[in-house]
Image (cartoon, rainbow, N blue to C red; front, side):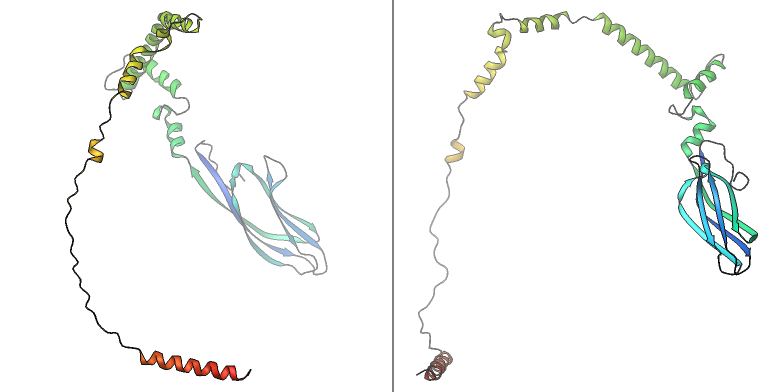
Length: 258
């Protein structure tokens, strides 16, 4: 497979295989039995990463071509390929074509070519140290000058902060805590008197609700704008005829039972 697939040793490039096409000519007698296996060894898990079987038993020879597709998998698993015949027959003019793609990780490529590309790149600190050691004097025009200054400042700030934290001893806080845990505490030690006085003063204020129930609504007389005149509604002759028809219908139905 090394002679067939591209050999990329760079860690930022991977070869992914997702299919293959094979073609060959089988020469045999129609009455003989033969099996043809197209295989690729699995160099990681053992066995075969691909195994395709063609059964030529009881049929005459000929030419076969197959297209096989499968999910992408890393080419590092694919070992030596072979076309094996079991039985009476011979394979002629075999051709195997692999379908693959190259995956390139741009960030990994930049880090691989230059570890100083980003602080997250593997080997960044060692590369920066080697770079600084190779310089007799770092110039302000150097692209890593500001980063070098910031790194030194941050280290100095961390050292000063650790020294200040070690120098400070929270004696007052510890004494207050011990005092609160003690059994002989006064009310002033347990309750903030000023805060309690402020809360009581707020609760004692008279709420002014006059603006809610003292309200003048302008009133007056609202006269009717629509006047209905008296009139006579005539009877509906059609309704009278329908009633008469209904009465006759009921009379006819009733006569069947009388």
